[in-house]
Length: 163
Image 1 (cartoon, rainbow, N blue to C red):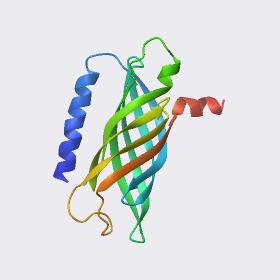
Image 2 (cartoon, helix red, strand yellow):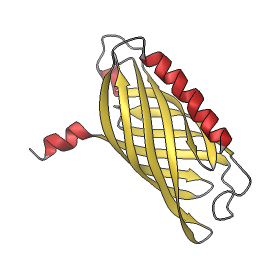
Image 3 (tube, rainbow, N blue to C red):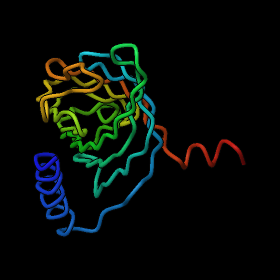
């Protein structure tokens, strides 16, 4: 538990230090997806997208991972932070994809990750998870290969859809 708090504190200080340098626009998104972490989990939650220009974008998120571990239903909270990078200037088509680096953490593991995203809405990432503690979830150890497939839906899009 102490390792999780320490990691969240360090990531928060890092990103809040970056955000104090410039005025950023904030967009809210609803997140749904799939996570494989030595077990399959569905994911539902939300993210905040921070941007000044569209070359470097920052995201912070919180969600719940839900799935079955050793034939028992389990739910884990998850926090994530991402940096989306695309340095192509004055060419809108090239801004359809971004390289993504980030990290995610739960009360059971911490996982750095890399991948790519299309339009900042459809993410495919992979990484390696390091367990926190010894017991895992329902006796299932959560370490090793981490794969995420996530759909990020801007709330503005949902609002406009029902007008």
